[in-house]
Length: 152
Image (cartoon, rainbow, N blue to C red; front, side):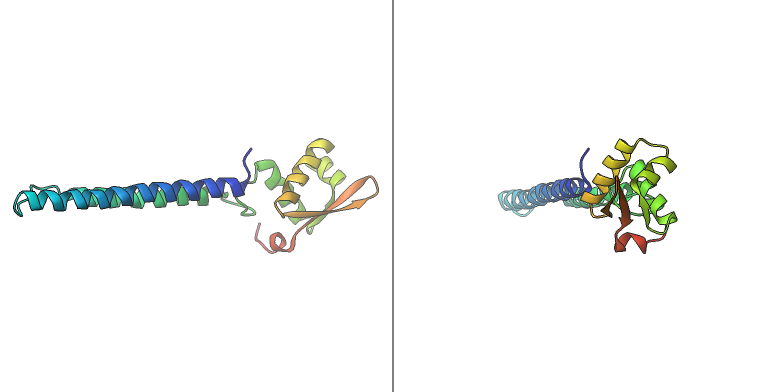
C-alpha cells in the first residue's frame, strides 16, 4: 500500500510531466504553423482549432490529478489523505474517547486483533496522526493536536 505522500508525489509529478508535454506540443505546433504560413505566403488553411485543443488537454492534465487527489482524501470524518477505512475507524474512535485510549481498548472495542490494532496504530504514528506512550503491557494512543481539532 502506497503512503499518502507517495500518492501525492506521483500525482504531482504526473500532472507536471503531462503539462510539460502538452506545453511543448503547443510550442512546436505554433512554430510549425509559422513556418507553414511563411512558406505559403501568408495563407494558412484553417488549423486554428489545434491550439484550443492543446489548451483543453493542458487544463485536463492539471485538473484531473488535482480532483483525484482531493476526492481520495475522503468525504466524511477526519480528512487525512490516504487513510484506510480501518485507520479512519481508529481515528474516529479516538475522537469519541476524547483523543486517548489504550491499544488494548481500541482492539476490543473495534473488534480487531491486538496485532491488527498495533499495525494500524503504527501506520498512523508514522503519518503523525497519533502518538503512543508505553503503559505496562500496552500503549496509550493519543491523537496529535492537529487531528483533535478537526470536526468528525
